[in-house]
Image 1 (spheres, one colour):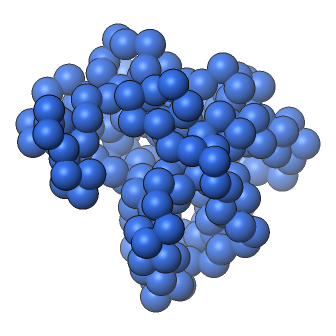
Image 2: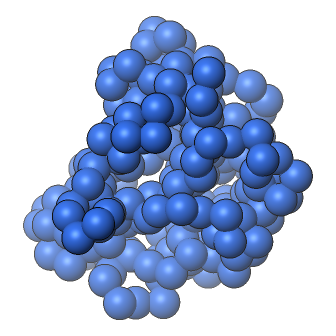
Length: 196
């Protein structure tokens, strides 16, 4: 079966020093580069997703609850929205970037789009166009955007695996809940989540 790798939101704002830093984010970026360098030939496609916020409404707050609202992050054109330098070796193999959340929260990479042959294309359509049937999901954060992307992948009919050793999580409680949600959706997981 044809398999793709999805790199979820490996951006500066989600790594140490960023406005919404996840412990272990920079280490995950480094590990993802190592994984892609060693295994890129095993994938029919490698793509990345990115938060790309301009005016996402209540998703940003000066007094965030860290459930529905968050400190400002990954603003369009900001350094925080750039991919982390430790992920650069992996990015050499990325065929498309799916930006999400211009005017919404958009946790899932399947809410994003890229421009392909002068038209906007969503992630599911892009993968199907390349006859992809399986996806591996990695990135930041295990309990938020990785979870949402993997659940949508499974819902869209892709056989989905989350490589946990290539993900970083925000908090133990939300990570437990995310792993339970993934199991219930028949998403396979391997390894253990990176913590800071």
